[in-house]
Image (cartoon, rainbow, N blue to C red):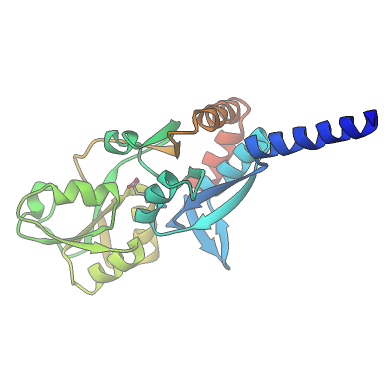
Length: 239
Ligand code: ARG
């Protein structure tokens, strides 16, 4: 009888800890953002992917990756279909109203991509009267949509936007600097122009109901920054 009670107690405890802290977490990203996340032979690769895997090791969670459209990520997190988003996502004030963000792990800026022969676009203001490609839901979309008199064309991914630019369907594309630089490297006939937009900080997003996980992720990030892992990843992907 005693044994049975102990056994029942153990089963209950297991069930409880399992419900409270599952061993895996669903992490959403949109792998069209080199070198932060991209697909290589169908496999998820990149700076964010490795960083998140290391965080998972630190906090004892297996990462289950979910490949989604960028503008579907935040709604999925808010409806608890995801536990975490890591996607080169800028921690904007607007997004902070709806989700928690970890500390920042990367600082970025927006750049303008144009065809080499384009000489009359050198700032956001100079885009007035032009047609400009942005990627749906990106911070570049938000920024360009605020400029009056721009014909904004929204694309589902950066690759699509760059193709439209090369085909001269748009006069420019606004995109985060690292992926933008990569498109310049991989394509001929394009050049990069600076914008005067504010710097942006990438951070990891977690649901507002999950302060515990936010803190765990922050702690793990801190450790990875101190023990040299973060620097190694920076070196690997950005040098
Ligand atoms: N930094 C921009 C934003 O937060 C673009 C991020 C795009 N990321 C991606 N994985 N496709 O809106």
